[in-house]
Length: 208
Ligand code: PRP
Ligand code: URA
Image (cartoon, rainbow, N blue to C red; front, side, top):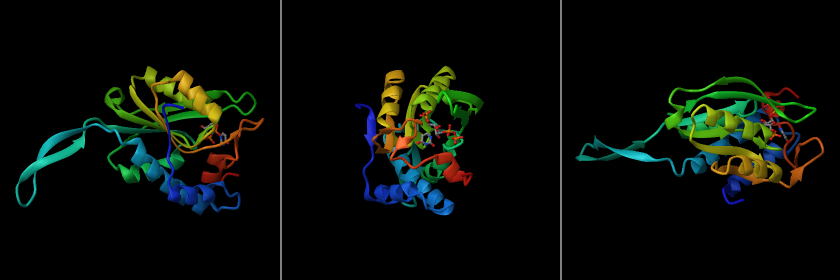
């Protein structure tokens, strides 16, 4: 697990509890996801390259700093959208692209159904975001597609990751760091994360 950051923070523990609890309302679920998304963005952007430019304070000229490349957030639809609010609240300049991947309920294999990527992705600092890294099939598929589209500097942001998904993503894409709020125990025989939080998309969109 060399390229994995599990972010430990008391506020994450509090909001993860809200997200895992099955009686949590949709409103509270959304608020908790946004708060954790914000914290994960802080860590996922810790090596964002900056460039200098000159600014002028009311007192004198000094050095300013700005991103050296665009921050590009790519949620994996649908559930990845749940983390976007928290992330762009932290970095409002970020561009947001979309990849639509669903996991076939029988085979658990990823199926692509949509994409819309911002121009200049080759030079961007890209965060692929999805709350659940379960088998890793959807995540690995999305990262492969982004690489084929020119993206180079990619990080994967997941709320909860299963050891199986981490292994798969690291084997397929060892160059992609994973930033997560929790590494859970395992997958069950439906490939759901245990203890997890159930179906993240259904809970966030209120479609259960
Ligand atoms: C969920 C989740 C991930 C995927 C994870 O999406 O948001 O994209 O499953 O599973 P994996 O690691 O085994 O591929 P889902 O297919 O339920 O679609 P949704 O986002 O539209 O709800
Ligand atoms: N997708 C989810 O939404 N939850 C899981 O536990 C696994 C995949």
